[in-house]
Image (cartoon, rainbow, N blue to C red):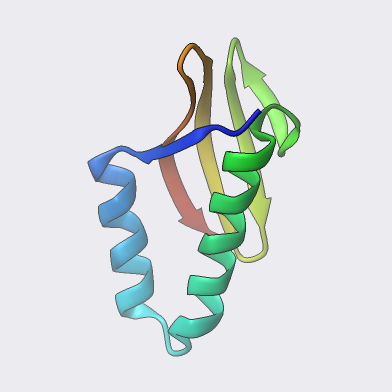
Length: 83
């Protein structure tokens, strides 16, 4: 089942700030797109469970905290950071 991917405004702003501060933006853009791909394709198996329906997932060097909803099928990105 395909999920919609929604970024809360604060997470989207953090991603934009990470990209703006990066020396090499193209690599980070590729990683952000890969995260979006996994969130749309199979968010329930991406990363690890944290509590209830909230999970944490990572593709080096970015990590996201996200919530998985079943109806409608949606992955909501709550936070992002670089590690």
